[in-house]
Image 1 (cartoon, rainbow, N blue to C red):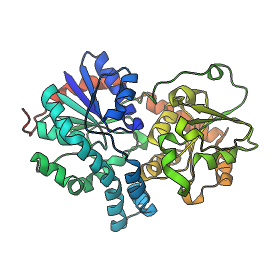
Image 2 (image 1 turned 60 degrees about the horizontal axis):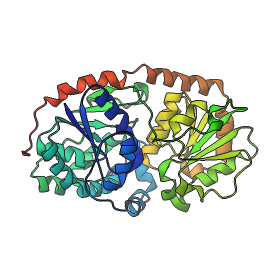
Image 3 (image 1 turned 90 degrees about the horizontal axis):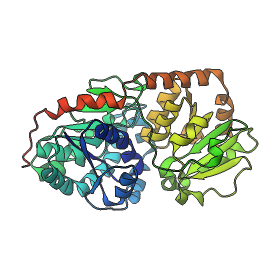
Length: 397
């Protein structure tokens, strides 16, 4: 079977596809990963073949425009508000970003599907060029989500956001949920709906990297990971950024490892004596040695911490962050600090409550056990060939 996987250029999105592609190859299937040109090196560093589609463009001004438009809208996307206007804004803001990305990728992706003729596609949940190209070419498509199913909240707004895309391909409709969903979230933290889900054990992959010597040595005291993911440089002064988080750890009796990208390192300023900065250190290497993680609630950080059984403190900024953080807090494995209440003092208080607490540790361990009990990806991919037989409705030849 030939499987084409696709994602847009944000690293934390195509990272989720990497273990799936590994599992497909190990099962004897042929795979290819279609991403914008700038993402190709990240895919090949993961040991996978890549094809460039579309073009690179600066998505940050678009994120800046839409994601900061209404704080209430992101709460609505996470299910907190019921006001229709807020919910509409919550759906249209991120979809405006993802629709532009789909427009840039769509034509090249359709052309690639025509040439390579995959039996099945697997697409990042918000890379809408994937289901569009699949529908146009009559290829069944499987959605890959990142944990708590944020993208399913957006589906009601997709017909309007993707109307021009569908018209260009001669499509009346596109199912952005695909024929099935690969779901790495522990079921107790997932929303209950009628989506066709294949629950799978999450295999954390946060990019390639080298384990430093200090990480392989016995630690001398408790260790806290602080990370704001790959989006720290986007948040700007209006957000509660990682530089402000680190102020919370002055005097805390723990080793603090701040995992950042090189571009974010210069933002940190003067650091407390107990803070170590680790650039380009994948979280799946670091977290098994940690007793706590403090993050913005990004899907990669939250899922990796769940797998490692590590309690969490989250300061969410966007709708998907709120959803992830609320799931962890409701599961008893951590605490959520609302953005408007975030300060060095509130973070320090939450850290002191969670760090070493038997109840949080027990809940985090329970989530790790639940996650580990899900079917391995090697088992799940054996079910995908049956989906390849699903009839499409497109016109590619």
